[in-house]
Image (cartoon, rainbow, N blue to C red; front, side, top):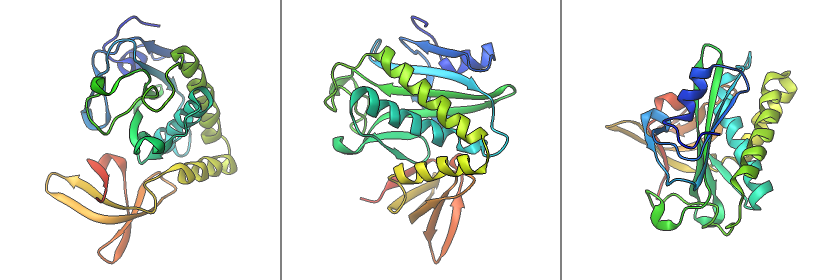
Length: 234
């Protein structure tokens, strides 16, 4: 446990020891997908990273499996039901589908660094955008962050083991994610570039973890690395 740290992902990559967990009370240079910044007040969030061995097959599913781990931990520890937005957001449907957590996975020579952040104790004015929330705001004001860390890691180990197991176990991860993903079945705006915004319908997630969308008379997959934003229409 670090009192403060620039980035837990960077520290886990520097240590480069499989299954070593890096946790900080205050992350000063947190990063989200596509280099976005992520900052929280001291002592209000769970911020952790762990280096996991990359699955032989389906490593692109690791961020999605990590989302399942956060969903399960939030339910177990806070008693709050969460759902997932492709590719790396954890939402609280009962709080207007605001974002309570996110995942950033980075491939390293020794495996995959899985970075996880969950908003725990923030009040509304401590959140950067109206589309964010915390467990406190969702009606769970007494969550011990230590308990949430343990639960996240426990569920992450289970979902990671399934990804590394045979095809039947991996299929279970895929099915669980598809059932938890709110993006599937919705009309969305797909921001592929600054000037390329497509209105499409999300129809599924394929075996490579890509979002499958239908629009313009065709159906095709898009990878997380090719998308800037996926936003619900309206």
